[in-house]
Length: 313
Length: 286
Image (cartoon, each protein chain N blue to C red):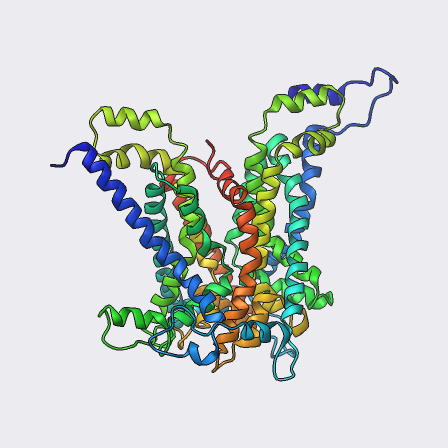
């Protein structure tokens, strides 16, 4: 970089004129401008406007009143509503179940694939397929599998003697959340598998060999060599997937539309229903604002607890 | 106590068994989708299920593509819309993300790491909340039901991730090569386009394929920002065509699902290596 800096300031020897040159910082910012301008329009402005709207009453049904300042009224309504609290409960169960399931299956598979197995790359490719299938397709497919009368989920479980009668996996409020979570685990585990497998392959073999010579057991090596080595990547992997799963809309919407009643209504579904079905824009924005604050706090705490250092990307 | 060789053999056997079980769980649903898509309707609704179609037929696929009972099908239109929006999103994001990622990788300034963390943390912003303003803005600009609206909306999630992937690749290029090209009189932009970009071609492919996959997948924005049926992309298009409130046209749903999955599967088969490399380039620095 020092070389380039000196070049940019140097007078052109041939002409003797000072060339019009940008400093590296100016050049850097010009490269960033298209991205920053686009994201300012599609993300930053909508975010700020959303926060602004959350302090207002604004209904697309009631066009006469327009946008009216209501202060903290939307937030007060939300925080005192048991329906809102139950949406948070549903969201947390969905996120914990999905990410937990995906991570455990993904990590276990990565550890298995990290051995010297024949056809390892073929297995990895085939196991990525659920992740490649479009989300709408996966959701419709699982809805078909969970079909009460003709779905193969009931048929297989019944044949194995695990259930005594065919169950309404989608239609029964006590089962629907389990069903969408299971579909989401199926769809999402390959991402963790890929990321963690790549991370495992960066562990220098001699560290493991040294640990083996020291007479450690496999469990000890996992606990004291592998896990510490993967700490940062596990943090990133979990953080990304927790954030994404909070956002997850398509799977649930396609399978249940948040129902039956509100059994699978997560925050993402709740915003959509409030803002785009009940047209209560102010309240939808307020749900989003509280969710955002929660994510910011969560991420900061998570990175602090896990990493201990600042986030380096 | 087993001897070491025996134990190793046992671990290996269990590993293959685990992979086998997982392969069945991962692939069986997809096979079931394909099987369901080529069955005549009377073979679809039977218990016990027909695992392998006894009377395979392409009639359902046909009616999805060409329509039936004299009604035309919007499926080809959805497909074209999806291709346009997805390719548009991919090209637009790739150009913008490449410039930004290069800046973050090679010309960091005070606060540029913070800016990059900021861009990545936009993934935390609730999409439904962003959608409120995007919807109102595109409504005011008369851009609902247009491709640019969908492409712009898709940038919200596509640009940050593409920047992350590409920065991982730029970081692997040795600085000395660029310094040599600069001394040879190549401008900074020339260094990027003529020297560095060819070296990170796999990264461009990875980011491009990844952007393609998530744009092809996108449902929420497309369902909200398009109201006219003929402007819908495949995900909301399928739901609109075949999923009613009380009735689901299962044969057509499965056939359409197969058709939507084919392009991304083909892409994946060709670019699997790049995609895997790309997904891990940003996260794993080894």
